[in-house]
Figure 1 (cartoon, one colour):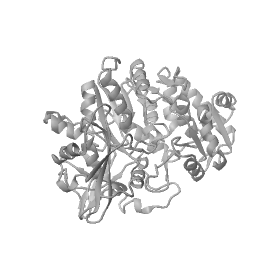
Figure 2 (cartoon, rainbow, N blue to C red):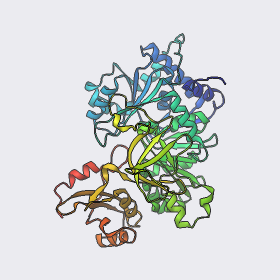
Figure 3 (cartoon, rainbow, N blue to C red):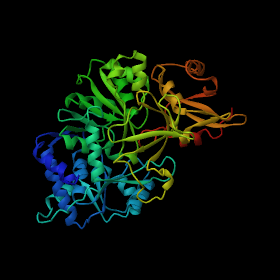
Figure 4 (tube, rainbow, N blue to C red):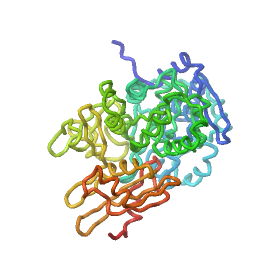
Length: 521
């Protein structure tokens, strides 16, 4: 058989020929709509590659982006690795000091910055090692126009690095993860499968997940590979702007964290007839668990939530929750319970769950740590030496605790760091959170363990009520008592207007623990 390298130039050539007329839609900061074709994107990405080489970028150099979701960012996704360099997306939601640390740790040589984000860049510019900044606007257009036509593009190897992202740093300093051409293309192929994310040429895909977060879950690469229409919202992530874009661009698949979909649910429930969306829009949810109540609410609105799970270290696709044919005949409650789980591994992903006794049985109750290996799972960090994150037989230790059932569905019950040890027994905070968010009056809920003189730790629930609805601690405790052992029930409930989140949409439990450090029972 031919040994054809799996490299980004294959994707670009296909975009320039088979998919030359497919649209790439971007919403600009002024809310105007900009349209470009994949053929134009491919041409401009090639010009970007030549311009970078002409500017002195060599194979293996890091080129960073500080940008929203739009066509120019897609050009960087394709053009930077075409030049043999490594695309490094910077998280614009981090503190400037954190961005400076990450850019320095990565060794970024050039930074591409949206014009509207220059004030943020100026806050960490002094601590950034980059030799040059390219402002996306007239400066970027001039950079492309000046690309030398006689520059020879490098020969790419499928094991060459293509991209780089940093972990969210919830348990320490962020760590860099490097993706290769081979891992990215295999990840894209698996993501596109019908029983995976289901992206094809007939799709209109709106990645709301930021392009600076795990390469927007790899979706720009997947969509370009298969020729799907791409719809980018820019900085406008409010529910009304997203719904308008979904309607006008006939979006069939959208992807983002639960926080975004909660806002869309509220808007659609208030005005159910306002937006004429495509039937059965798939809403890929990752970054945090989607409560069963949210899944049911969207079914009633004609949209279908599809759970997915992954990490920066897994590119990120590790699990997808799509019901197998045999599950369609299950009672409704069991079907929803399955859909609320994180799902099954897509093809080429080998996932096991182990505890002290070994690999856990597929009984849906025995828990252990989730271990994963696949062609797109990292085998090490870029600069951090942490061999303990990998097992002797080659699995990555995710730090997630979960179970696996007879259907092969994985349910993540908690992060190992977030488990609550009470009286010698474990309590899974995430299970309590998901249950609380199933109450009609609860919009969000986070549960943390706080020190207790007698029990070591006891759970505190921090709750945000839905607009216009009332609920008290006694009602919520009774609601939980229907499904959990008595010792699992939170000893206290604190009602707040907002729960702090990380830049990737997860509950920021480190901040909650600090906030409630002086709590007394």
